[in-house]
Amino acid sequence: MKLEGKVAVVTGAASGIGRALARRFAAEGAAGVVCADREAAGVEEVADEIGGVAVVADVSSESAVGSLVSRADERFGRVDVFCSNAGIALFGDEHAPDDDWRRSWDIHVMAHVYAARAVIPGRIERGSGYLVNTSSAAGLLTHIHSATYAVTKHAAVAFAEYLSIRYGPRGVRISVLCPQAVRTAMTAGEEDGVASVDGMIEAEEVADCVVATMEREEFLILPHPVVREYVKRKAADPDRWLRGMSRLAQEYGKGG
Image (cartoon, rainbow, N blue to C red):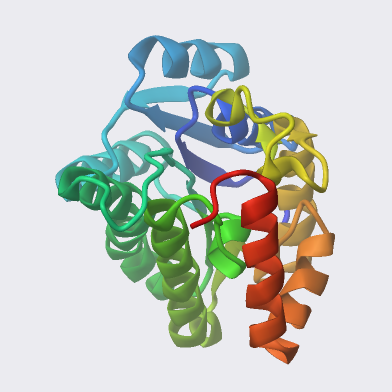
């Protein structure tokens, strides 16, 4: 799918990857870009910059996601592309507070579920549409320092797989975005951390990769191409892969 003439919704659009996606979609000639975020000032600034529409929304709320889609429908008559991109970094192990686990689940998984509920029925009727769900390379591999992050990002990938299997044959395209380290507020101070072992890229590079992958209508969006090789190694020999990840965790000082 090409973005020219399409109507797109981007969540988490006030900063980072979401802001880069909103800008890039507008540059591609989108007919309309609806920018959503919890941060009113940031999302309004991005929307004003690109001539889009700003919506303040907490995507952990199903009613808020439904209202967001309704707002886009009212303004533009349809939603062609929904980028469920919002994310948080509440890193923790099995002892992390239950509230951190719930919040991570709500943002990294249920927000995608709510978007699918709100968007897919209309896209099936039209026989076209695109959902881009942001996960992480941690959703394909793992995060050696955070169970809360790795588990919920894995779930995000699994849900995107389900959507693709069920709705792909009915014209609804699904992709899942799985970058490694990206220079955003979430990764501040991690320039020398394990997440950036293969290099920290800019959000604009991620947006470039998203647009290119959407044009090819491929499921996996991998701004760090090496992730594909890591996934193959993990599948080929899980025990060897786990031993290697344990050594990496020890090297970076947070192993068990």
